[in-house]
Image 1 (cartoon, rainbow, N blue to C red):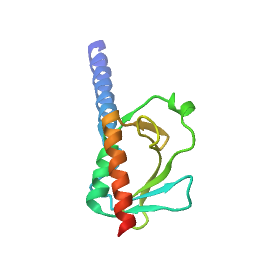
Image 2: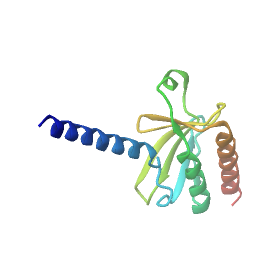
Image 3: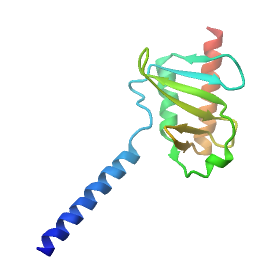
Image 4: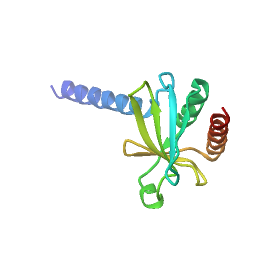
Length: 138
């Protein structure tokens, strides 16, 4: 009886561990469904709409590389540089806050902070600037 109970407990723990690890490895945003990215600088009254599907997918792919960070960032981050939204249709979207003027890009989605490494941050900043300039010139 004890062996059966121990087997059930071990199986349950393995199942919980599997689902926990699976949930941590899933993408933050669904880049395949994303149609556009909206960026609203918090210090300006304008808004940027990145509606080129390839550019949007590239930017979201960069964000999906972000690693979850500890909550120590809550004390160290000030007002975000952008309020952003990934749009999955005309009305559906996921809003998040984005800090780009740091050594590493940080973003807050559903109460969880994510951080890109230095190389990813530089690439993301460059892609955002190019997308904004491309949108402004067209």
